[in-house]
Image 1 (cartoon, rainbow, N blue to C red):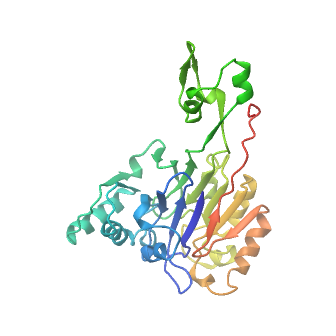
Image 2: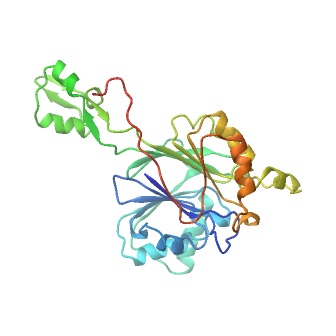
Length: 317
């Protein structure tokens, strides 16, 4: 699983950072996911290791333009690339309306089926190629969400000792069990979960939209490998701003991540006041003061590889 940071700026692009867009690449499929799609995202994709043709799922966190203005152009380009497989858009209803109106006004007819799902109406997790997606409510000036993405197509290995103890001989049923399929063997049902285990613990990441209340994530972070969260400002700069921004500062998110023992915290969505060589050093120092595990400050073009962790189940051979 890899996280591709395509845009790490807040509000407006600069010479070094584009606005919000993050790609998630799974090991088991060519399909990949995009979280947010600010203006210019298709250019960022073209410069990356990702292929827009294989983009299968687009997730939009909220209605602000720096998170969605690139959508109509990107979808048009995907269509022009010849894609025929469906593309799923999970977004606020207003963003779905925005995209469909753009298509109508510009006489754009995509060559693929665009399946739209307003996240306001989603109450359960959603399946996508290679993963499961959970939607988490956040707090911003407008309704905003985060996405918890858990890989699903992890190869299974056989519990050979347990199979031998049960006098189950080798055969085609072994292959079925490894595929997660329950099978009948000599009059008894063999459950895949009982006789196999995942080659590694399914990896799980959270990518957040704009959010000034990290504590809202507390019920979702258990077992998460990487938390990607905005740190638009330093605490001292945020306090100087006379109006409510709905954004987090580095101290606030670092304190929360330390409290819930997140293994890796990746910060992004930085105000343009910090763009440029050495400008993020103060924000980094602030975050490191309060968070003591792995800390990453994302930049455009960063590809973060989410490491595999051995399955520590006591029943594993």
